[in-house]
Amino acid sequence: MLQKPRGTRDFLPDEMEPRRMVEGKLREVARCWGYREVCTPEFEDLELFTQRSGEGIIGEMYVFEDKGGRKLALRPEITAAVIRMYINEAKVAPKPLRWCYFADCFRYERPQKGRYRQFWQFGVELIGADTAIADAEVVMLAADMLNATGVTYDLNVGHLSFMKCLLSSLEPAAQRRVMAHLDKKDFAGLEVTLSQMGKPELSQSLTDLIGCRTLTDAFEIVGTIPEKERIAQTLGILDASGIQYSLNFGIARGLDYYTGIVFEGFARNLGAENQIIGGGAYRLAYLFGGDDVASCGFAIGFDRVMVSLGDVRHKKDTVVAVACTSDGRRRALDVARALREAGIRTEMDLMERSLGAQLAHASKSADFAVVIGQREAESGNVTLKNLHTAEQKTIDLAAAIAEVNAHGAR
Ligand code: HAM
Image (cartoon, rainbow, N blue to C red; front, side, top):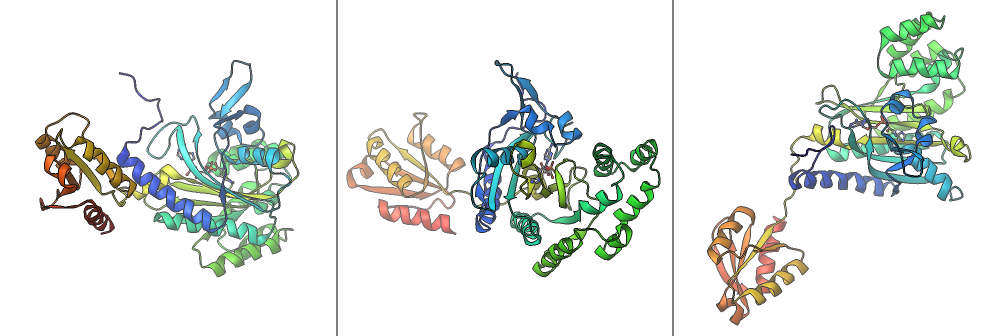
């Protein structure tokens, strides 16, 4: 028997319905903040992702050559693609642009619970606003979205300028190597790398920085940095908004394009794969042939949110089964259409079962049966049977629709 590829999942209707419900909550928050949906291709030129995605992600990409010999990659994330689209399609649009997306990404990782080779991100990108309040808006939106799903999480906020200040004596490539260790919390590897670079003393100051829990402590380690005022302003807005977060100056992020504020969120009830959101301020457009526009965004790991939520209770559709005799079929088709036009989920027998067998099947899958025999076909009424209580009455169609709708509203 053929199986799905490793690291991918099938979703049955019972899984898709809660997924769509949670997705709907995220969409609604994005809409309320003015973030409008965009969509980019599932695959892009490989080069789009090799410029700044970071070694980790480059090593995990699904890369292939098409029949025209072009080197392509399944998108491992969406940010680079959105910025490519911004340059292609919307460079001159009034700023800021508030965009969001819900899309699947592909990373060749070792699969486990919460870590898949195909997974979905709900993300936002705020393009063209380079201010403290823009950074704060993105973090507040992240918190609003996560809160809307009902997940319980811890949000950590940091800023790369502290770490970059400590690492300023290193070449950019060396800085990236150090930050990759920090992102993986690989402190042993970090020490070895710093020794090889002839900078063992940096290990202690990085450890001190990571231990800081207040802005004052962090400034004591790095001294005054140009971003000081902006960082204080952003955090001031976050504090006034009442969102819950902790400062963490050790956030390095696994992607290489971040330049300023960075943040990550962790679901409290998940184990190893508990990071449910990552984001920050970045500059990518100039690398793709555009202006040096400032952007800030995040992506929520939708599958991890679903794992964290567990069994999501969602409102189930009221289901009506239209059961009929052969004399009643023509009228039954009309009744089914009227029920559907009233927005009611309506199913008819397709198996040529007897009326009794139709009702027996309906009792397993529906809330009501609407029975159309010869009598109902002639009178224009319907027999409505509540399959939970076995209560049954013959009424006109409008009254039956009203009763089914009343059940759905409960
Ligand atoms: P990221 O941290 O690489 O950031 O991914 C965002 C989220 O996607 C992670 O926090 C995690 O929840 C989820 N995720 C990552 N890999 C997997 C996987 N293999 N299986 C399941 N979930 C996964 C980005 O992708 C950036 N583009 C975020 C961003 C947007 N930054 C600015 N704008």
